[in-house]
Amino acid sequence: MKTLQSLFDGKLVRQARLFEAMTSSLRLHLPPEVGDHCWIGGVHERTLVVVTDSASFATLVHYQQQEVLKRINSDFRMEIPAPLQKLKLRIAKLAPQTQRPLPRRTSASGAARDTREVTDLELEAALKRLVRRRAAPRSR
Image 1 (cartoon, rainbow, N blue to C red):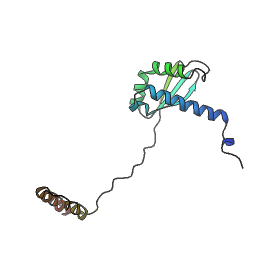
Image 2: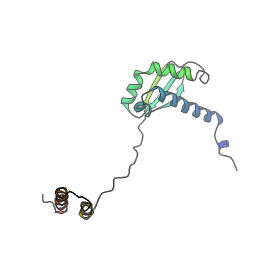
Image 3: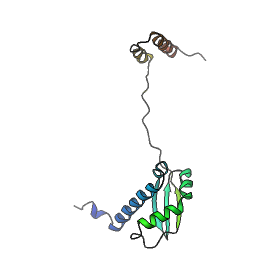
Image 4: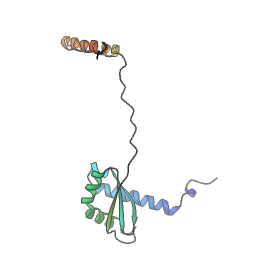
């Protein structure tokens, strides 16, 4: 039986780790609200490819490209063969994260139960009126 590590090319694993470290360095340089949406996508012919999930974040990174290149070049001068000169931005359309819908009450009886916990009589009366309005059929 083969080990999991034997299935991966060592060069590819080293490159993935390098890009992960570069992404961490990039995120330290950028504001957190921008950095959380940026990843290093690759290095090709002295060009650093930065992937982001929004055009607005790409614009913010574009304005800081000289500082980003300087930081990556200084932090990874031993790992990259030649200093990076350009920054290329790519926008990736990420699949939206599915969120479970918030639970909703299906009947007015659940809301009526909650009014029993209220101690202020005026507030309790107002909540009961709201429950009755919600339970009444709408005419349109």
